[in-house]
Image (cartoon, rainbow, N blue to C red; front, side, top):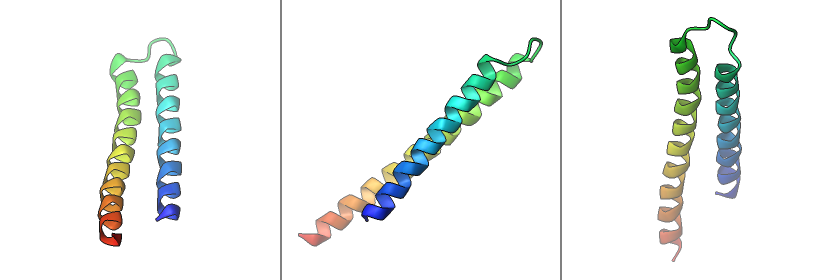
Length: 71
């Protein structure tokens, strides 16, 4: 379980880095970049982090079940 937790944490951190990268791309987009493109970049980053948090929440729920069975 510890290995799974560490792997998920690493994945979440990587996706948060991806989100920061997408935000920076939107913030520093060349002049004339359509707002729709900037919005799409930000949405990609946000969606990735939302997915990572959903995975972490699912793991947390399973971990609670696991600990409940050990008692």
